Image (cartoon, rainbow, N blue to C red; front, side, top):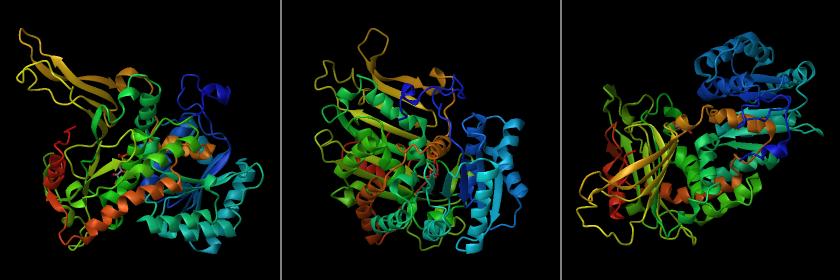
Amino acid sequence: MTTPLAARGANPLRDPLDRRMPRIAGPCVLVIFGVTGDLSTKKLMPAVYDLANRGLLPPGFALVGFARREWEHQDFAKIVHDAVRQHARTPFREEVWKQLSEGIRFVPGEIGDDDSVRRLRDTISELDEARGTGGNHAFYLSIPPGLFQTVVDQLREHGLAEQQSGQWSRVVIEKPFGHDLASARELNRVVSSVFPSSSVFRIDHYLGKETVQNLLALRFANQLFEPVWNNNYVDHVQITMAEDIGIGGRAGYFDGIGIARDVIQNHLLQLLALTAMEEPTSFEAAQLRAEKQKVLAAARPPERMDLHTARGRYRGGWQGGAKVAGYLEEKGIPASTTTETYAAIRVDIDNRRWAGVPFYLRTGKRLARRVTEIALGFKRAPHLPFTATDTEELGYNALVLRIQPDEGVTLRFGAKVPGTQMEIREVNMDFAYGGSFTESSPEAYERLILDVLLGDPPLFPQHEEVELSWQILDPILDYWASLDTPPEDYEPGGWGPTCANEMLARDGHVWRRP
Ligand code: BG6
């Protein structure tokens, strides 16, 4: 997804062994709004340190935290330090930390308060002077979308959204990109009234995952797969994102939205788009987005919602030897809620390549294990010159892209069981990242933050993709909202509600047990 190395030119600062992330950000300030949140502590601050540690941030880099806390710069630096110690992926090195911490500032303030934003502006100007950050500023809005309007308006009023020549100002927003199509449009209106679309970076962290980018390598760098990547050979596709955790302390966020909005609208539909799209003419943002948009425009929700959607909610019980609370018993969840923690939907794609091939998407909390994968199930051979007993244990051939945690690719096919009989059994041929490469993959947020600082847009969905995803999901959410019954309960540590199994059984399929 990056420009070819040759086109980028040699960079004297880059580690010649690190061929995957050889680009170094230019001087800039990264401002994080909502710096006290979980995302910031667990992902953003550690990713900034890891980038610094890999030598991908310039000396003229500064990190500014903005939050409603009475902290001094050094208090915030200590928070960053602890977050890095706890969550960074690369080893702690005193000299890297020293250089990074010299550029750390904190601005105490309220969103909506002019004085606070004035202080922020002064801090940024001071950094531009003292650290040589070059007038380049990225504003990461790790805050509820309801506050976006106030923040972007204030950035504009205080001149922070302006781009002087040769300088840039970018805004980074996290999902959820709206609650439905109408609110997504409104959100986009708010942000684009201040920042041009080329300066808006929407984060879908799945696109920053190495294995998701590998999907493009697998499909388009090889001759082997693309000829069978269509409805002549593929019977159906299953995209699974399963988690073994519950909602943790996120009741306030989660109960208002449910799992379909939380991950299907973004992560799973992006995976579907990358799996199903045509080959882009290049991996430049415009071409890639054009292909994703085309396929999302051809994707549609099921005609029979009652038959081809399923939702569930985990109940209390035992998981991995521990007693776990049910969704209704989680702190902060109202008894009357109908929010789903499991969702499965069928999506069909109306184009020549995919007509007749159902894409089944499922996701859930408190399932048997954490796993994300894309599995293409192939049609059976048109003729089997064996007896029925010979092929008793032969299922359908499958190609499985293991996104996480055990990153790799599996090809599943039938092989002869050793012996004097002709007996066929399914076997796996495996590629594992860990076994084939010594370099560790950068964390998704590292890659994405670096791309923001570089202004490299291919891994960030455009508003059009967001709209198209809501067009697929909205009718399903409306249907669920119209039902009188709550989502079906399912046991923790299993694979979801019975209705999801029935949904597939109706089409003659079963869910994979990854
Ligand atoms: C987030 C969702 O986008 O992705 C969370 O809001 C979910 O609910 C998380 O737990 C999972 O991310 P990952 O990278 O661990 O698969």
